[in-house]
Image (cartoon, rainbow, N blue to C red; front, side, top):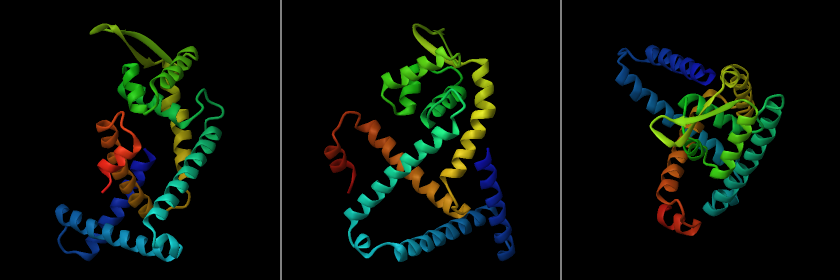
Length: 222
């Protein structure tokens, strides 16, 4: 909710700037203007990054990939550390577990296999987490009306209240910390890049569920 509000405020500010510069206030023109602004910001951010990057990184694509991967790995560790502190006084332990509860809440009564697939976890790991949630009284299991061999799950009344208030607030606070002092424009650029990367990995995993890394790289990285 907070992210959507901040995005809306940013768009209103851009609209105000556009209205002051342009006589026509057509939404299509605004969209084209916004795209140019976005591309200009990307170029500015690129020039800043190039100015700050070591020369050996600029001249070596493989070294750049390695540095990004290393930094990404450290950021994942920071995420785990801060998430553990954020949810310390709640029944959940990790951001992944929060994601599982949020997915069940959004889908209302998914199958356990659907939860595991969405979480990108090993099925057995996801099922163990769900079992713990059941023991804690957060998740309830019931027969599928359309397939008696299958079971579905839903949040208990206690979990519904907790997800809608306490956990969401903690997740928002955690998100604020994870993004540090980045500006709204930097966040928008980062979000766009990460969404593109997420789509790439989603498609690659769907098309190569069992393939080895070398095969995946050879078939998908030009």
